Amino acid sequence: MTDTPTYVNPLRDPEDRRLPRIAGPCGMVLFGVTGDLARKKVMPAIYDLANRGLLPPGFSLVGFARRDWADQDFAQIVHDAVKTHSRTEFREEVWRQLSEGFRFVPGDFSDDMAFDQLRRTIEELDLVRGTGGNHAFYLSIPPKFFGDVVQQLEEHGLSEQRDGSWRRVVVEKPFGHDLESARELNDSLGRVFPPASVFRIDHYLGKETVQNILAMRFANAMFEPIWNSNYVDHVQITMAEDIGIGGRAGYYDGIGAARDVIQNHLLQLMALIAMEEPTDFRAESLRIEKQKVFESVTLPRRLDLTTARGQYTAGWSGGVKVAGFHDEEGIPQRSKTETFAAITLGIDNRRWAGVPFYLRHGKRLGRRVTEVAVVFKRAPHLPFHASATEELTQNTLVVRVQPDEGLTIRFGSKVPGTHLEIRDVTMDFAYGGSFTESSPEAYERLILDVLLGDPPLFPRHQEVELSWKILDPILDHWARQDQRSGKPDRYQAGTWGPPSADAMMARDGRTWRRP
Ligand code: BG6
Image 1 (cartoon, protein in one colour):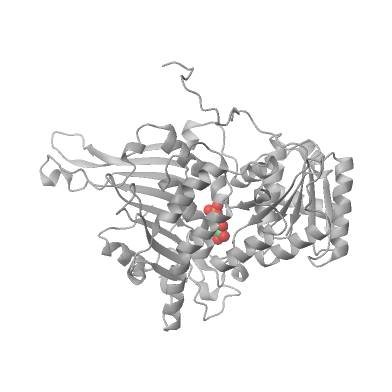
Image 2: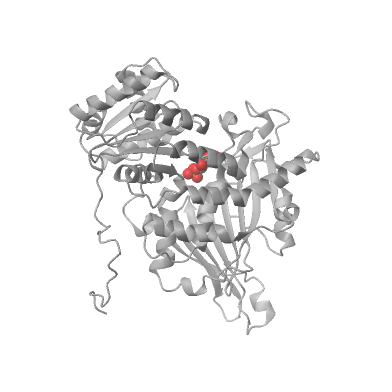
């Protein structure tokens, strides 16, 4: 084999992606600084990036909130968040340099004077920190305020990109609660920012193990030939959490498991597993392939038999007694919001025709685990006495997204001895065992990509719309069931969901994995 290819694609990205990418001069404005996400994820990720030397020396962070704070109060909030949640060690000199770029602007979203002050603050930072007019506005706030904030940014000249500088907006899910509201949300962002300046965060795409799905599929020769309906029996995508809804009743009630997680994280995982090889890894090439998957998704006719939903009741989690969903603070007794959802989808193309994709997510399940299991068909013929393979199940490839990140392949092997018996064994790849570097947090990668203007890991609006088109009929079906006095089933906290989820699989002659 020679290193010099005979043919060269003139369009392919010429950049050597092994080199660390460092953001150029820029700053970030964070709306919603008091929220959970800002404290637990965004602020620590900014520090971790600074600690890894990936932020420009003059990076600035402006907090905006309805609080009577001075710059030092804001710095203290970030300091506490970083000390508690950052991934990398705390280094005084990194902190000192970073925090010199912190500013705070008090005000609410309708306060013109506050946005004027924000403009002046940014101008001052451009001068003293050399941020070059490049700023990302991170809206870590409920989506109902997106429209107001971007309008204010426009009216106060904050969205305008001048003399080669950039302005970007970063939004977090939920991107709407159905197709219509997603379109409205997109329109309100699109009135001010061009599509290339809107970065929608689906933090699952920032996870190493999720990015590795494409590396595993397309950098290797051995998986792709069997990655189709000739060999694959079905695919199970599971995101199980042991936590309940915690203090998030305000957000969660009325949203539920399907909108919170399936519409975004799990459908994105499905797209990465099912898509064709993209021509390259540019955002547009990825979007085209993911979009084709979403466009090919089919729903079973009988949604009553192929979906399941439930709400957790009191039970045990990690040896501790925990309350049921209806006893969580802020949840009305009559709430029909599901905390567990399972759905069945098909993908109507040559590769996947006839292969069901089962997606499930729930809170307060047996343990925290996210995985994609590709379950293969049985060998067409077994030249053994039936008793020899009694314990043999189906070959499975499991992408272990978290925790215990890695990949497992399960296959049959002869049990040592003079007799002939074949049992399942597993072959494991674990990140911890193969690499010395620890994986960056999803938010580190995604925030850096925003600052670099690198969009492949951010879902485009078309994908968001298509995801709602897939989910809306299921949500409508559940809403109709509720009107006919139906309600989600119950499952005890610490178990693996309602019996209806098992029944749904049993109808197809299959069972859920118990990871
Ligand atoms: C969020 C959901 O998107 O993902 C939460 O809104 C969920 O309900 C969280 O708990 C899980 O993220 P992770 O990275 O811990 O799996």
